[in-house]
Length: 418
Ligand code: ADP
Image 1 (cartoon, rainbow, N blue to C red):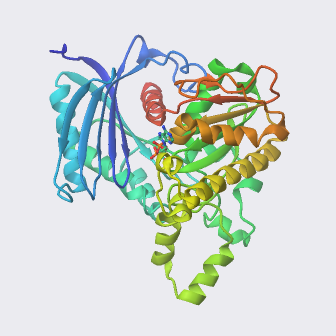
Image 2 (spheres, rainbow, N blue to C red):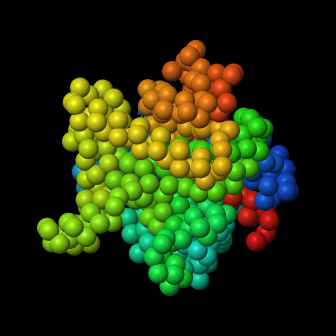
């Protein structure tokens, strides 16, 4: 039997369309007394937050599967449901009940939620009340596939956990340091005023990476860095002194680099042509651009990089070649935005694990003076350097942790008493 846990906890909810993840962090030392706000430096190395449990239900809408693990990776629970038999709300209830059983004696200080869109208004995390929730609801049309799923757990938590603060942390907020030249489209200015602008996404991931840079490399913390977030969603971000200068995703999480099933940047003339030629409406275009394109559309094999790397199909090779080409193209654009480059960081599923993709990207950065270290163990884990000592540009893998970033923000906001 594990000893029953007591003390102060923060829960983090990361809810998507097909999965809900819940992480429980305990607070240690003088956590609530520590200076809140300095998330980039002060809490980076020794944040007083410790992950104690991670639970998730995936396969929602197909074959739902629940899996919970303690921080050491040991199993805490597992369950399967018949195909299509677990509505979203019941999945949430299952997670809440599980945590209540697992942690009957803890004090839940707050719940942090990853929310994809904060629009132009929310440039930092916010404690959610009815007015904020209405404002976040109004942003649903900007992220119709993600935002509703992010808001459902907040509503449910208001009912199930009255009095427990709910904090929304946004994927867009980190990019609000960008200049107007980067944010604005060359459309009539009135559209910018109406909110049709580049917001950028994956901000919690980039913020986490920025928070690690002082410990990883003071040169990069002070310098110009391109971070490549290569997961199912894929984007890149230019950081200068840890702040976002520009990023590949724009108004929606569709722009920029090709992804598992999303196309990335596209000449908008293609859309006009397809609307005229095939009579495609908005929903049909949405399916094409979000679900049938990217690695899946190119390869006809899979949206999953592991399967493409294992495949002999010529179009799987083509999909990988396009992926690498577009990443190297984006690195050039972001390096130009920064006026030079000291560092390149890989993160998320492909960035952390696909050594051959990383190597192809590094080889295309030779013109920047990047020299790969030939002795790097391709199976290594954790934070690690990929570039040789004589390389002008340093290359690193830094595993991302968006949930920890949400926990830090939630803690900081509550400690700050706002
Ligand atoms: P999400 O954006 O949903 O959080 P992840 O960051 O987990 O996704 O990234 C998923 C991607 O990472 C998939 O394309 C998957 O194939 C790829 N990936 C995960 N592990 C490996 C690996 N060992 N080798 C190659 N690709 C991998």
